[in-house]
Image (cartoon, rainbow, N blue to C red; front, top):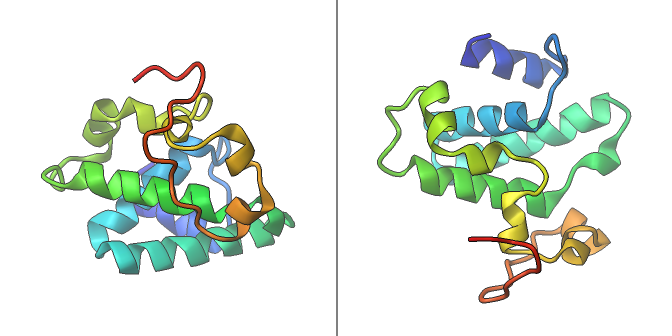
Length: 136
């Protein structure tokens, strides 16, 4: 499925054949960031993701910290690589596509991401904290 088709399905709240998994979320976020500045892309993706979760009857699944943290990581990786196709970007950034353990484990303790606060508002990463079991 091409990038625009996946984004259109997502924005309509439809699930592509095979489901809508973590890698699909990353791909849609990447597409938004290729189209717009970080602030516009984040606003568009955040709104669409909240609508998608609510449309599935699961608005509580939306997580503010995870959404913003991934958008920032993707934006950082896009610097100097905006001309890459999705397969090229994905091949260069496999750590963004791995859900468990998540790249966010480098920046957040599990209990922080599991908190109601992190779900509702963006929580800054814990700078300089090394989490058990995380290899850099």
